[in-house]
Structures are given as structure tokens and as C-alpha cells.
Image 1 (cartoon, rainbow, N blue to C red):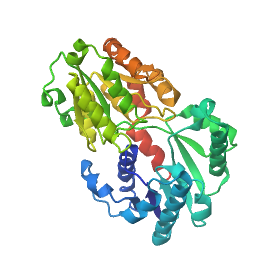
Image 2 (tube, one colour):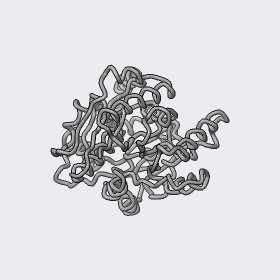
Image 3 (cartoon, rainbow, N blue to C red):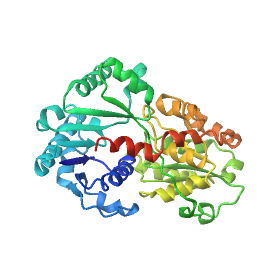
Image 4 (cartoon, rainbow, N blue to C red):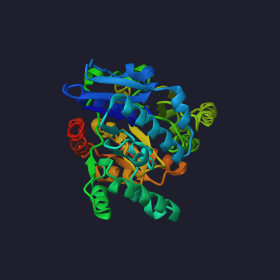
Length: 380
């Protein structure tokens, strides 16, 4: 029996989850697995350790195939991704698929994927958190998507990331038991793998280090953070250091670097590491910092960054809205606000008096890597 692990992207959580699932699959020697992933996986796989596994094969989505869905509408993307996936299903005679980004296969999966194949997968953005602010047209779209998921036989288990309350609501609304809770795992990191970030960047004890990590984009609030630095006092400019680590995405690339250039001229302390970063580097940053900035504008989903915050007991500054705001408050992970640039500036001073150490540990218990792998491992 052959199962396909499928993703069209290796950005953000995709690469991490691929690695977690790979670690599960390699021990199930009676099963065969094919990881269908973008070709650029080859460029960054060295950031993680991938022990040899005779029962796992990688099949890369080519640049030609990627061109069919990149920058496409939701419908065209779904159509082409389902065709790519169905080609691999036939190639390997696979009967099961685990989709790391399940929603990208809607609405065409039930019509394109060959009969007899079942699909499980993960949903990150939970529309229930968007309902009040969503247009009537978008509400209809959400309901149609979830009707497909609930009543189409091709979909078996649908994992809702880090939102147990929505699991119960969705199962009641759609009269099903397909929706299941999935922990958003943090990566435990031993101290011997950490580097001394403060020494590396020559930061004194008096410096306050604020970090913004992961992919940089408009929806991650990257520009809002840069705009907030315009309102720092001269004393704060000399005291605060802002470190941006992760790929700067095309939607903000020019704007990001122009703002950084101008802010440096005003005396702001800014460090940029524009590349795909390892777990170890992110962990070292979190261990060294005073605060993690996650003023995301898309808040209807969890974030792996709060796992880093909880593990190293560092506070976050986050949006007060949606699932993300709810998780930050529930686990006492930091401060939440309406993430305007002015509001962010006002919280930089307040975060120094944060006293949530200890309370965040429950997040690590609820979202362990073991819990994630056991949940996924039950079906792959």
C-alpha cells in the first residue's frame, strides 16, 4: 500500500510538518510513502536532518508544473494541483493522500482524483473566526467548501490545527465526525544546540532585543512593525534592537528594504537575516530575545512562533483578534492589541514588565511534537 504526502509549498509550517511526518513514516517499514513536494525542497533540505528511509521516495513538482498554479486564482490553483496530485496517484498506484495544505485541493478534488483514493489533511485558517467580518458571498463560499469536505467520500479525516473548540462546532454544524483536533507542535531544543546571539551581534545587557521571525510579508505585519519604529524616542532607538529573520517575500521586498534603509538613517537598530533559517537559529534567537513580534493580520489560524515563545518563555506582541489572539490570552503568552504601528510602539515599553513566565509551559504540554506525531501517525 502506498500513501502520498502532498504539499505545493515549502514555506513556513509546510517544511516543518514535512519533517515531522517524515520522521513518522520512516519507521513504518511495511508501508511505502511518496513525498510530492516542490523542486525547491532540494535547496533547503540541508537545514534539517533527514535520516535515510528505504520506504520513502521523493517526487518533485517541476518548475513547469509549478508555473501552472503559481499566482493563479483559487479555482485555477485547485484545478492544476489536483491534476498534479492525480498524476502521482496513478504513477505510484497510491490509495491514500495526506495533504499538508488541504484547502488548496478544493473544490476539484472530488471530481479529478481517481475513484477509490482517500484524502486526509490539515486546515489552518478556520473560517468561524472570520464569520462576523466576512461578506455574504465569502460566507457562502466557506459553507460550500465545508459541505464538500463533510459529505464527499474522498475526504476522511480533516485536522483543525490548534482549535479544539472549532472542531466541536464544525462537527455539529455539518453533522459529521470528520473534523479532528491537531496540536500545533513546538520543537524542543536542547541548550547545547543554541548559539549566543547576543555575542554574535555584540548586544549588551542593556539592549532590548525584539525579533520578527519566519516569512516576511504584509499579512505577517512586517511593514506595520517597521512603521512602528518611526515613533520611537531617541532613548528607545539606542536601547531597542529589532532583528528580522526569515525570507522577505516578494509582496513586501522593495518596500521592506526601502523602509529599513530610511529607519537606519534615523538611528534605529535593525538587523536583517533574509534567508530560510534553521530551527536552531530561530531557537537561539528566541532564547536571546526580550520579545517576539507577531502582529499578524491573518489571525484565524495558529502560528508555530508561539511554540517558540512558550518553550523559551519569551512574551509575544500579537493581534487581539481571532484564534491567534485567543491562544495568546489563554496561555498567557504575552500582550495583544489592535496592531496599528502606534499601538505596537506603545507596547514595546510595557512588554518589559511582562511576568508570564511559567504560565506558558502549559502550551508546551498541550502542543508537544509527540502529540502531533501520534495524531498524524494514526492514519498515515
